[in-house]
Image 1 (cartoon, rainbow, N blue to C red):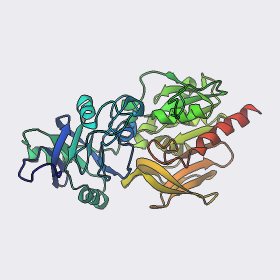
Image 2 (cartoon, helix red, strand yellow):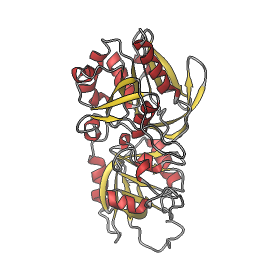
Image 3 (cartoon, rainbow, N blue to C red):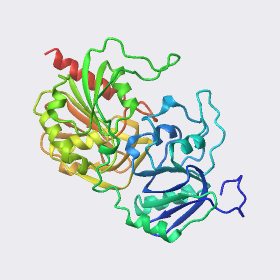
Image 4 (spheres, rainbow, N blue to C red):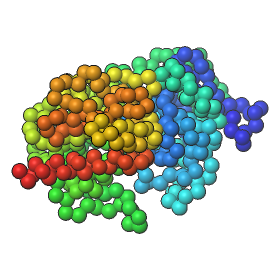
Length: 388
């Protein structure tokens, strides 16, 4: 229970794990029930960007940092139109926002967008449970009267199929193609359009974050975004200088059934290709590698990643529950980055061509900006190709 809530008050929210563990708390935001995978995120900032990141489709996010909600919410920080994560869990109830950019508070925003929030939870204990048993399937419920059918909620959590084998990219991708020309936020102008871009990029939207598209624009790219199901013919019809593969949710092997053939056709050209997150996994599958489900994944803005070529260590933002199995990388494909937390793969490249990808998020929304150079590397590769 939060400090503001008496211990004698009846809990109004519940997290039911598939193994029968129960965590009670104080509900806020939308009421009702939802079933999803439970993960934890260690970021201290950027909760709005996290909740609107399409990569969190099918997941409830537990924030390990207790002060969630302090800066409120505002339309500029959305990574997509509405929250995509199924719900959020915090230790303390959100407080009144204290930031000049806030246009609403977190509780109102969650209620308006139909997302359940749960406060007053021992998030340290919950995080330990996730780490020990792997990201569990859960059912979460918010009832202002505190009436819960515990047996039914546990059963829903157990019966849910989980993310393995689930293609969620098709649920979060754009319905039709569109153009993007907005650059990264800068003081004091805010978001500004890119002027005189010299590169044409086709970005495949598996659940693209807006700040990734802004980073491409800031690197001098005129960006056309296509749906996840776009064919190679549709991609190449735009006569791009390069192809970008975006982040996204779900099982990469499931999305790969239609994405991999397209990427393999694009790889028959000499176009530079750059992938992030799910796009990294799609590229790896197209090159002949495989992916695996992680125990609890990587979710946070403080993940150390080592560049195997330079020895440089970057602090990165991450959000993924699947990883590329580095042992399956074929000849001619090198591992370029590894996690210093667990040694898992965080980057690959083709040895003889400007085709590369990373598991982490160099757009840093939220998170450090150590890896922005990757967008510039992609732009340099496209300019080098244009120069002949």
